[in-house]
Image (cartoon, rainbow, N blue to C red):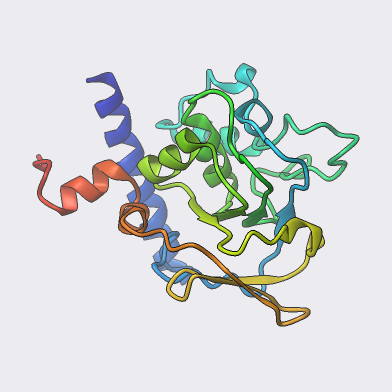
Length: 218
């Protein structure tokens, strides 16, 4: 029951943010086709980026259903990455949002604990899609359940993180299931999201269920 109430609060806050974005001409946060040109991406070379690195346990006291704490949670996204490997912060000091809405990862992205805070923190920071070689199953499921991130997986086994540099401009097309490196024009095929796509488009499993008439709206 408590989780349902928190999801309801989060849903209402998302609708407020999306309505505000629409008024400002920014459009929905989760378009079905996601074109991220000329936004940048953050490259994560290390394999097995775990949920403790995405959002350390000390920040799990923040409640995502509270707007100010949701935003604050985003400011700590990926703060657990070792500085000697990642000297550039995903969210710069003094900022609440990231400059990298696309995250390029390696194998087994999101492994570790089952905390939903991991995709929520990245989404709160402004990340919109992760493109990785593979995902920990629970992280993938949490991305879909919360509607915070599109977890796209490379289709051809290419280690894209060996070919792209941090800050390189890319375009992600979720209808064609491709990522294009704009500097070279190379196109990388992505695995279709399948039935997970509409759930994320809707903003998560509860909003999807409402739209499908599975949950009554009071």
